[in-house]
Length: 157
Ligand SMILES: CC(C)(COP(=O)(O)OP(=O)(O)OC[C@H]1O[C@@H](n2cnc3c(N)ncnc32)[C@H](O)[C@@H]1OP(=O)(O)O)[C@@H](O)C(=O)NCCC(=O)NCCS
Image (cartoon, rainbow, N blue to C red; front, side):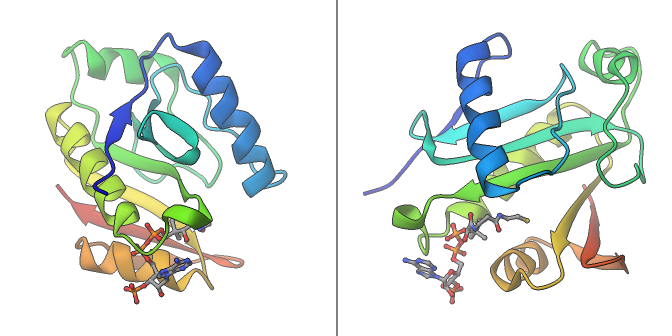
C-alpha cells in the first residue's frame, strides 16, 4: 500500500499536541520545536503511523534552538527570505518502516522549504542512527560537524 504524507493544518492544535506527546515518548527530554511557524506532516493523517516536522529560521541554530517567531512569520509572508530550512523531527512507526517513508519525509520538507525561499537545509542525527544517516546522504546532505553524540547535516536547496 502506498502511504500518503499529509500536511497538518497550522491551527490543528489537537494533532500537534498528539505529535508532541508521541515525540516525548520517542525522544524523552528532547526540546520541542514549538515555533508557531513549524510545519508538520503525518503518515496517512495518523501521527501514530509517523510524523515529521520542519521550521524556517537562521542558519546554525544551536541544537535545540528554534527560529524566533518574527523571522518565521516574515519568511512565510514573503517579506524576508529565511535562509535555512531545519528538519526538526522524523519518526516512522515500526509497522511502517523499511518502505522508504523517511526518504519521502525528507523530500516533502525540502520542497516545502524551497517554496518558502530557503536556500539551505540543516538537520541533526544521533551519531549511531545509521538509517537516518543513509537517507540524509542519499538526499544530498553532507555531515558537517560532530557534537557530543550527534552530527549536524547540511545541503544547499
Ligand atoms: C529512522 C527511521 C525514521 C527510518 O524510517 P524508514 O521509513 O523505515 O526508513 P527506510 O525505509 O529507509 O528504512 C531504513 C532501514 O530500516 C531497516 N528496515 C527495513 N525494514 C524494516 C522494518 N520492517 N522494521 C525496522 N527496520 C527496517 C533497513 O535497514 C532499512 O534500510 P535499507 O532498506 O536501505 O537497507 C525510523 O526507523 C524511525 O522512526 N526510527 C526511530 C526514530 C528516529 O530515529 N528518527 C530519526 C531521527 S533523525
